[in-house]
Image 1 (spheres, rainbow, N blue to C red):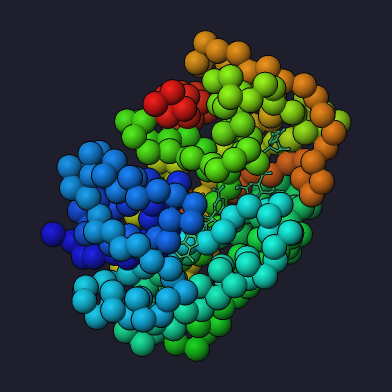
Image 2: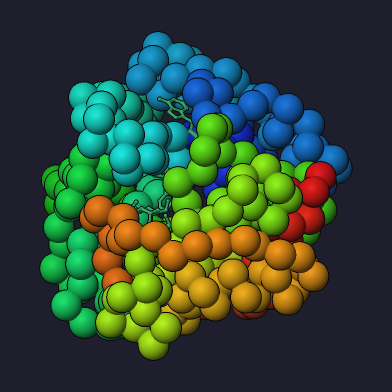
Amino acid sequence: MKETILVTGGTGFIGSHTSVALLDAGYEVIVVDNLSNSDAGVIQRIEQICSRGPRFIEGDVRDSDLLTSIFSEFAVVAVVHFAGLKAVGESVQKPLEYYQNNVGGSLKLFKVMQTAGVKTIVFSSSATVYGDPAQLPITESFPLSATNPYGATKLVIENILADLYRADEEWRIARLRYFNPVGAHESALIGENPKGVPDNLMPYISQTAAGIRKELSVFGDDYKTPDGTGIRDYIHVVDLASGHVAALDYLQRNDQMLTVNLGTGNGVSVLEMINTFESTNSCKVPYRIAKRRAGDIARCWADTSLANRLLEWEATRTLEDMCRDTWRWQNS
Ligand code: NAD
Ligand code: UD1
């Protein structure tokens, strides 16, 4: 039996898939989540997939007493920290909530970890920290910038972790910069369940194909890209989840701070995504060309060679897998 990992935000989209990957790798998992953007039913679904489940504690990472009690009751060896708010537009409207939850929650968590002597952490960062990249593909050494409060919280937390490592090299830290996570577990038992109207492309496509939304707006067809629409590096959430297990394995072998991109290295345009979704799933995605969305960049994809080399990890699932699994989840 392997050690116990605390997963904050473990009932959310990426956290639930990572909990499955950790259980499959033999770890014990404790999930703490305040259910602000997820639902406790996910825990039974994880149990169905893995034949054993995580222990679930409903609560907030800003509650230091709760975190302290978890570290004193269980022999946690590492934390995978997903808990946070993630909607870019909302972060512009409610910056204080974003700083309080994302930065405030992380500070509380890191302090309790330090006091408990648990100094291994995997943190969910984002490709948003690269702002509008001057070149492609994006390597980890590119300049960093934030164009909205959400992105700013990711940068602040990355910096806090770097300072923590500088002050005490016993910390083992992985800062994982995700590109665009999509898809769902192939069982269709867990997936992404956005509340209200989705902001992101993939859930909007699948809800449009299902008839929940009338049509998809393609935000701009006048970018400097082959078909004029925005290009992103979409990664299957199950591949992303296995990247976390690889990062934990790496940290167990090396006392280091690690910063890596998790993506596929391939750029896919909005129109390519719509076409692949339609052909893979034999369905229709009605769409119209709309104005560019404020704040969007034209092109973004990862150089994944560092993750490939250090973590001995690479994304293996195809764009068709992403479309098929999203559709299966939508229909379930
Ligand atoms: P999600 O909203 O599905 O999951 C986050 C979970 O954290 C939710 O279950 C929510 O209830 C919980 N949570 C929020 N604040 C909390 C708090 N204070 N205490 C306890 N639980 C709390 O989001 P996700 O897509 O799974 O993203 C997970 C992490 O990855 C986030 O930190 C996000 O910023 C980061 N990330 C996501 C993406 C993406 O496209 N999904 C891209 C880059 C980075
Ligand atoms: C957005 C966030 C980013 C976050 C990421 C994952 C912004 C500016 N950036 O990235 O910080 O890490 O989500 O949560 O919000 N598109 C459409 N129609 C739609 C929706 C999207 O054409 O209805 C296009 C977009 O213009 C873009 C692509 O699809 O070209 C992907 O968009 P989206 O899924 O929102 O992700 P990002 O903008 O890359």
